Image (cartoon, rainbow over the protein chains, first blue to last red):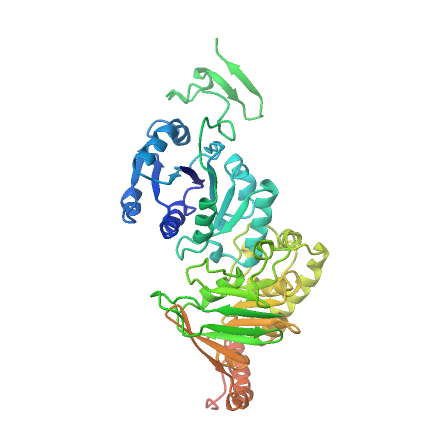
Length: 232
Length: 253
């Protein structure tokens, strides 16, 4: 079994690109199963289900969606395996840029929207820098020069990645992505994350609503960058 | 250099009528057809040297062979420059920073900026400066900068142009700048003058290439008078723009 983690900024076209790729995988004789992680609500399972592949939705609700996705990885794999799938496609919610929910043996795909501007690749962090494949979408909305400048910026922060120019509307790039998935290695044994999740748990993570600084405990970082442990 | 387009499938999955077309250095080819007929997709296939891996399933070959992988993806080695339909830049940065960065991505000398600006300002009436922000440029200024950037920074043996008319710049001058000497040029157009300036034109319908028309001698002769009509129309447009009242009594056909 292969595992593909599809992460990326909201609205970058993760679902559309994945749906085209699902069709191309089927043409290659590969059976995918899809797990879509979202925060509060999604109807993507209906959309994806029309392609005739097994789909499951996970709503993270109060938990950080990327932590939720990582925590449930084993469950997703055994579900996909019970569906007779050759490859598990895990689409993440794509909200916070601090976590990179990529296990080391999965194929890590970061979908990023070219219209977000050439400084975006510098802002995204581990989600982009630890990806194997960077899918650049909406390139048809900008000039070739802007696509090339964007590409240069992606290569600056992730020199080893493979960049796929894709279009969620026309399906451009999805055959290339399906081929990369076909050639990716199988997952087995203990998996490690490629990048550590945020420093530690603070009181805000556990539900503190009061804003004032005096109510917060944990490893906390000040506006000036000073990081300290507050608590007993 | 010869590029070959091997026909793929139209929107209904039916094989295209044109199975293969060779285009040699120095040729200017038109791409014509109604909206949604697949003109931009054909340009996109050429830009990425499709290898049966785009929705059209076409193959694009250079001198009879598929290009190396690096040639398809690395802008430093990509032999293609493309002017798309976009009228505006979305990158929030200054003109000079952007041109410097584009020069770097193409492995060019960043000092070419002054040449880019010089050419830009021959194409547009409103001057563009290095410290202007890209997003503040007008449609005409943006198009002029895109054309100059392609002529200087992306200077490549294959040039793809997705509509140059309606851009608020001098279209014939821009086409001359982009074509250069001995380049392969493909231009998507609805403009009769530009279409007749090409040697052949590919006709698109429903996502597929349906036929290739060679520009006839009659069309070529007609092209000269068409140019005079076009120049006249252009001068009328400039008068309207300047807020003048037109004094012509009859359109000359």
